[in-house]
Length: 472
Image (tube, rainbow, N blue to C red; front, side, top):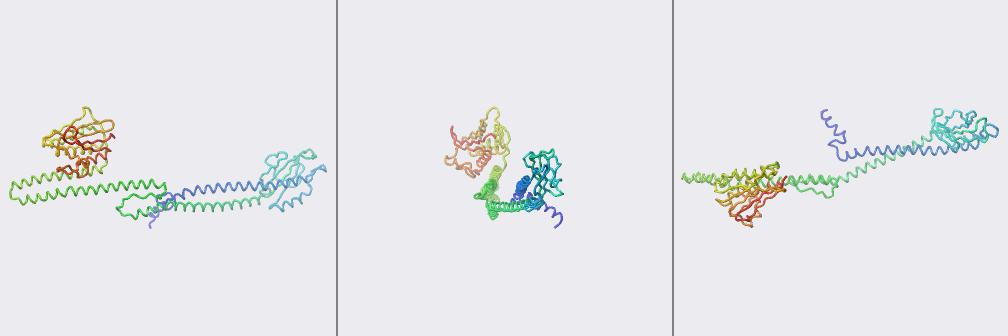
């Protein structure tokens, strides 16, 4: 492996928040600093409690020594005396784990017994209230207790006596260290148990996700059924719902593709066979007049095949193309579409007109798709309505939406067939069309959130086909 390859891999190994890191690694990396911080705070609090507890215990011992000394302080001889202090401190040293020092002195410091250079209190003690403080004596840390009380008999000018007892803090430090070490081992074990518990909980929580991934990987490539969300954590449910929505969209897209292929094969197979038969007939016909008639029929069949192909492409576009809404004038769209089909209407002697408000009729939507839908309705009315008849495009709008209606005065359609109009290849009785015009209009309306209505006219014979869609 080259050095550049190693450098590319290094961030994925070293960074627990990298894209390749697992969810377990990321969660542990997020939880571990917090756990370590809590453990450090716990150790600090434990150390503070241990020091406080040790100080309280040793201070009580120092206070006992101070009181014992105080009982042996005497001023009966006119001076300051302490009876049997060394034997007394031999006893204290037996119970202590380090050296013990004492000092008994008048308040003015002129009379001292014991260790005269014992460190003084940082502040003057109050009468009858012992104080305890840390100090250093002969380079060794000591804990000192000091007590001041009035003398029964003044010693010179001094009215008060100070009693100090000091003990090495080695035993206290050793006790605190052992206490904190035990707490550290306890916290480390607790941290290990917590990490193991988190890892186990993650493993148990992610088992349904792993099972879902395994079942999904075992699926066939064309299996687009929704994923089962039962048993999954609530936090994973939105992801499964999003995947199911994507699967539904993919399934719909695959269905549309299969439908287009079926439509194309269904719609083009018969015209192509007819074209083939007409070509073979024209080639075999020796009579030039009949051959010309066959070619004219062939030309008409080609026109029908071209129109069927264009309708298939328009249907595929209306099903799959993204709607591109834009503001436009519905009356202007109706006039443009009618004008484009005016030659076809004149060829059949049909009076084609547009009934629209004098003012503009603003709306919005995909103008090209809506124009295609209206053109299909007009084409059906022109070619399947009554020859020498009347076809009218009505434009209307309100606060909710806009409508384009195509009315003809032809024979109409049996009432039993009206509900099926708009489905692919659904045709009225006797119709020679492909049955795709209304399907295209139905698809365009569905893409715009509207609807296609085909019904018999109330004011006479014929059909009324209405395109309605809401304003965007």
